[in-house]
Length: 334
Image (cartoon, rainbow, N blue to C red; front, top):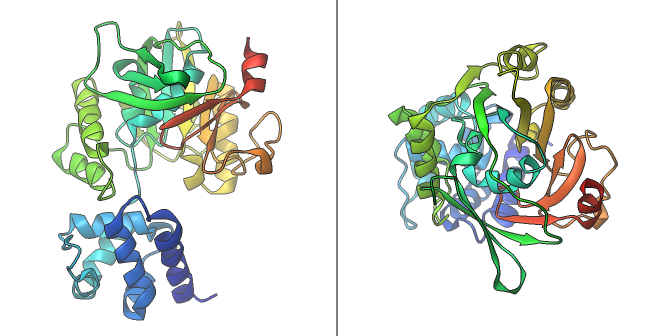
């Protein structure tokens, strides 16, 4: 398959499988690439790891592409090809969705505090504040499990559905927050906030407001953010050594390993487990870091695995909108 064919196939798949029901605008833009070889030729100039549709589309909007449904995005791309290619090449998807904390919380509830939290792929660090958010888990028979910080309901309220057996849920006590990212973002920076909120797809109701509120939380007490490749030897261990010695170090990799080459995934997993406890949210077939193989045929569609130290606990929505606690995991944990 040629580079041009690969671009067309990628955007066709996005238009058919990923955008429908989530963003009508992005669906239209992806269809335009499929239908217009000149657009695909422009996008083929972007390195493959930087030409994902959500990244290119977010950069387009950042640069002022018209977002009206009847506007000609393709004409805009052809008129701004050089700057679109350059800006897309310089940026990466840094979706910092605080909703993932609704999926992380059940695993954090299994760990005695206080906790020192170290996130890989932290972006602006919005998933480093699970103790600062409120949670609402909608369970069976119309029941809602509610958790709030000690000071009361938070400005960020994360809603999720809960299915399967109930397990203990408790707010963690986080005493140290740090993250590693190739290009960390600063919640206090106007430009970084604009980029991060711009990664929200048009049509996603409430998500931009949730991220903005979480950015306010992070800006009040910024975490330690290190610009580095977490897969490089010693990077995770070096930062982990600065965590308080009287806290349990928990390394999290929520959805980031998919963006790391396979060899780097193994190095990150090994370093995380050597440094402390390890919590991850990943597609079941992404790596072999699970303590037991996951049967893909029996796994719920469109769900990732939540695991603590390689032990699978739940099937979760990748962005935290649903948690299905697995009966076998609940039985092992006690």
